[in-house]
Image 1 (cartoon, helix red, strand yellow):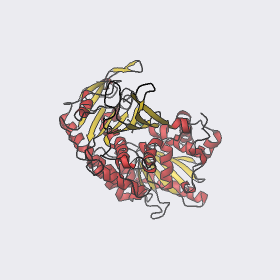
Image 2 (image 1 turned 90 degrees about the vertical axis):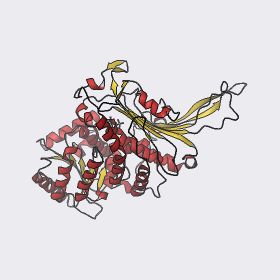
Image 3 (image 1 turned 90 degrees about the horizontal axis):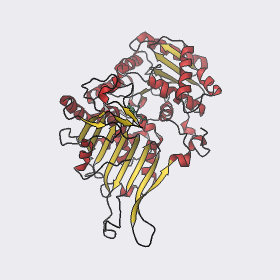
Image 4 (image 1 turned 180 degrees about the horizontal axis):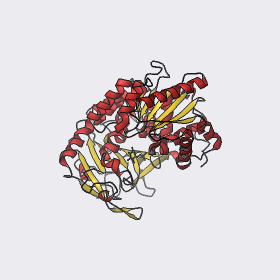
Length: 512
Ligand code: BG6
């Protein structure tokens, strides 16, 4: 699709967004994420002329393949997954600087070979380059990779200089508080915090970045953004897909670990944080950590703050789909949740008494991610008779995806010779104003890491604060096994327990 001429991304970036000469090394080079997201991201950065002139791309993996074979794999990934077609002139520039190093993640000698490979690149071009390591492997090998980056001297290269080595770590960042602390400790043995970029791809989404802009560049919101005017907040991350071929991974994860602990908590932090003192990484992340720390412990017990469920067979898009327990690689007695809902209380001046409801699930009625801010109702003195005055509470909703946009529900007079009212929706759609071919999250994130901007990445203390909240729930669920696990029909909006969580405060979930 042609880019809209009004698309701001094409108007050029400001000068300080240029990356220095960089070697990107991908661990897990033949993995699924590398093919679906990372290689297309690099290609599209090349397409937009955002890669530095001296840009090198190195795959590292256990498979023994040649440089040419890796280039062919990468080209195939672009053809299949890029948002834009493979253009020969763009791809050949990247391919000419693409190579592959084979080796085991626990094999120190392989990292020495990698170090020599990078030194040879520097010799060829006659200048120093920064290295950006992208760890996109199963978490079981995070630690050996990190330790070998340390032992080979790669992690400490150009320490203290702007072009010091950088490392991106893919999710999952731990599976509970203990393992996240351990991973942070391993990272800190090898890297300084400013070298570390923990990915949550939701932060790279345009609409998630826009949350900050909406909140802090529009003067009308801040005076209302508190317990005096807001009744409740609902954050929904719903998917219509099931676990598909990822059953093996998902059985070890579940909805709370897979989505709530990271993506949903990040949306909450951006919605609820105080205004940062500056538009820069540490100031923003300080505020996110503060609000996560102000969340009260979650009561995972019966009648508490949580609901969990698994999808049962149902209809999606006119087709019958199997239940979770019938999917491939799922234990028949699995106690892994595919839906989770949580009620959170934030104990600070801004939010005390305002419930934040979070929910996420696979095989829900449709794919939608949104943040809905429900305002308190106006006093009903003027328009009180319910037969003539259909009134809703004002709701501001950030439609994160799909159909990205922003809408506000307002009450309006129905044209006519008597006063009757009806709620109407005022909407803004990104696609209408800006066109639809926006950059993918990974493009922004890879570029930011090359530039050294950590704003859209999770700091170590943030990850820990979020795990601290979620771990008691995970522990309680692990102890309970299947006791308390509900089910919901695939293609529905989730189980009764999710509704009950809100009903206690006389709230209902929005049907986005
Ligand atoms: C990933 C989860 O982090 O996010 C997946 O592991 C999920 O299970 C995906 O499907 C959703 O991402 P998006 O960008 O499609 O909303």
